[in-house]
Length: 256
Image 1 (cartoon, rainbow, N blue to C red):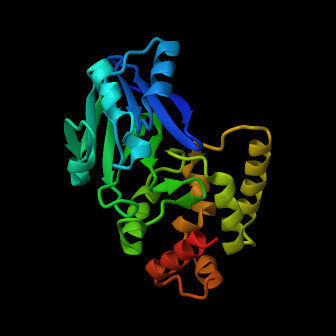
Image 2 (cartoon, one colour):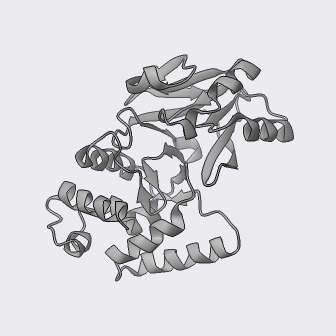
C-alpha cells in the first residue's frame, strides 16, 4: 500500500482535474482530464510522467483530454464498466466492489449512477481521498441527467458510509452557489451557516473550497440528509421517505 501526492488543477471555468502520484512505484494518474494542455503543463512543472488516466464518467468535461494524453504518454485509460462504450480511449473498466490499483495505491470502486448511468467513484483509504466526479459536490450533488432520484440517493448513501475524515475531491467549484441553496433548506443548521460563512470568505479571497470534508458534508449537505427530519420538514415531506425528499430537494435546486 502507498499514499498519494495530489495536485489539483483548475480548468475551464470551474472544473478540477487531479494528478495523483503514488509513493510506491511512482506511477502518476490523472482523474477526469477535461483538457490535455493544463495537465501537460502541470506534469512538466512537477517533473512527473503520466501513466494512467482515471475516469469517473463519460462527459466531455471529464474525458476531453483522454486521447491527446494517451497519445503523448502512452498511458492506460481506466473507466466505468457500465459506460465502456462512451469513454474515449478506454483500456480497462471497473465496477462496483472492484479494486483499482495505481501502482501500490489501492482504491475501492463504487458504482454511483444517477448523474450518468455509468458513473463511478474511487476511494483511496490509505490517503483518505475520495474522487467522486459529479456524484457528490461540496454542499451539493450532480443533476440526475441519466438516472433517477432513487439511484442517486442510493449512490450518495454508499459514499456517506465512508469515514468522516475522508477528503472529497469533487470535480467542480460549485460550493458557493450550493451553499446559497442549502441554507434555504436548513436555515436553522448552525454547522451549515458556519460553513457557508467560511465558503464566502474563501471565495472572496480567491481561494478554493475543494476538497471538502465528508464528515462536514454529512452534517450540512442537504443531498446527504434527505432522511433527516428537518430536511423533510423543510420541503413538506416525511424523512421516512428519503427518496421523495431527495427528489424534491433536487428539483428545487434545479430551479433555484
